[in-house]
Each structure stands twice: as structure tokens, then as C-alpha cells.
Length: 129
Image (cartoon, rainbow, N blue to C red; front, side):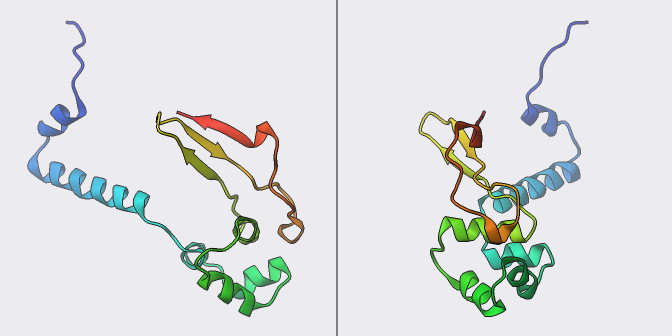
């Protein structure tokens, strides 16, 4: 018997109604999460990290972290240092009309207090398809 490909939609249609509904609910949840824009405060809270801990890692006061989390348009370098202080690495995704996505990894490793300017070399970017 020869292999006959089947579309995902056709396969899902063969499942019991309860499973189809569960798949639909979960897919909507995943799409909503993907489209959601998190604030620095939400990221920090999601990592169970206090403002005081981030402030200590950055060598600044907790009140400065509070102000940073309330800013509407913080500088990229500031976000970079805050993410590094939480143990993360900042990546940026540029999407172009031809659907090509370029992921930029501007965060150098090291002490978040000493992070300097964003890397300028080509090794800081990679194309994701």
C-alpha cells in the first residue's frame, strides 16, 4: 500500500468531537500568547524575581526598576540589561515583506552591570526560516 499524505485539517476531522474542541481551544490559547506583548514587569513576575533582586544585579535602587517598568518607551540597552539581570538573553526578530525573519541576538554574555553597546558583527544575527 502506498503512502498517501493527509492534511492536518483532514486528520483532525477524523478525531472525536471532544478532541477537536480541545485542539481548537489550545490552538487559540497558543495564538493569543504569541500575539500578547509582555511588559518587563510581567516578564519579571513570570520568572518569580523581585524588583529588589533585579536592582541588586544591576547595581541600582529598586525604585529605578519600578520606574523602568512603568516607562512606555525604554531604551533597548536598558531592556537588554534588565533581561540579563533576570538571567535571560534579549533577542530581536525583524520580519520583512518577503516573510524572511532575521533574529538578532544583541546581548553579550557577562556581568549585566557592565553590558556595553550592542554587538555590531554579523555573527550577532541569524536568519530563521
